[in-house]
Structures are given as C-alpha cells and as structure tokens.
Length: 100
Image 1 (cartoon, rainbow, N blue to C red):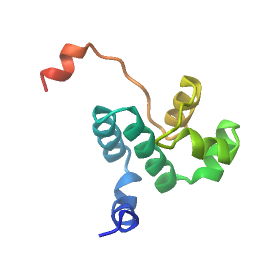
Image 2: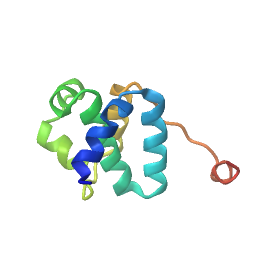
Image 3: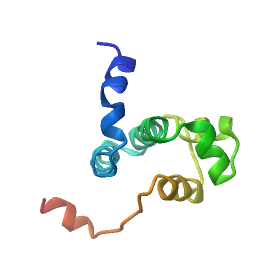
C-alpha cells in the first residue's frame, strides 16, 4: 500500500483532535523530523496548507518547507501551527513519559 493511500485512510481520523494528539505525540517519540511530517499530515487533513499559511501569516511554500523532514522551523511557527489546529503544547518531566 502506498503512503498516499495510508494517509487517505487516516485523513478522517486526523480531523479528530484526540486522534491527532496521539498521532503527533507518537511521531515526536520517533524524533523531530518525524514530528514535522506528522504535523504536516494533520494540517493537510484538517484545513490544508493554504488556509493555515494564511491564518498564521506565513507563505505556503515556507510552511511546506518548515513541515518537511529537512525543515528547521522557528519554535514560534510550530506553536502557531499547533494553536491553529486547536491543540496546545505541554511540557512534562522526562520521568513522566517513562511511567506510561
């Protein structure tokens, strides 16, 4: 099965904030590049790059580049994307993640 087919299968799920939260948390465990790609998947499923780029006042191409495996976006961009998706960041002690 192609990656695009898998993404289409999960597109409806990624529109659910709780599913998106778990998806992004798991992607972050696999490293920041994977998190950026997962964040792009959620953006595409929930509102699209053009609409989100306009909402957070960045260029569409810049947003695509930021949310790529090679992306190195400023923290403020990540924070704006997450907020625009109706999610929020949370900081927890590292030991808390080991107790799950």
